[in-house]
Image (cartoon, one colour):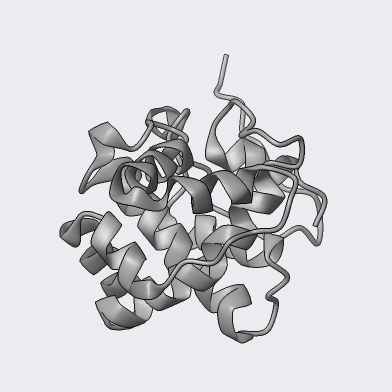
Length: 169
């Protein structure tokens, strides 16, 4: 017997299918940034919506795979990121984003202080901005992202990709 060959439906775009080794891997920072940008309402390169989502996605990607990865919560680095912020004296702000009340703001300087330098530099490089610009964009995007990802007043379980995809945006 021969091998089974799958042919796409007429008119469907051709795409590369990941091999078995890609199964179960997490999404890249750019994909995560696109999802976060959509979650935040940015669809055309508008300020903190898409830009902040892209930088935030790059940061979460860096925390998953690189700098601080072991501290950043595995497939859901958001919990690890919030732990970093809490340990840096931003517990009230982080809790306000998860809770159902108003979101407290943070500054780019506070974000830069709370994050590992290597993770921030990697996220900035991926987004094509300076580390300070990245910290400023993360400070703008993170409260809204965490708020939208925790509609019940707590972070849902599961991978970050699954949590984001489950949101209605």
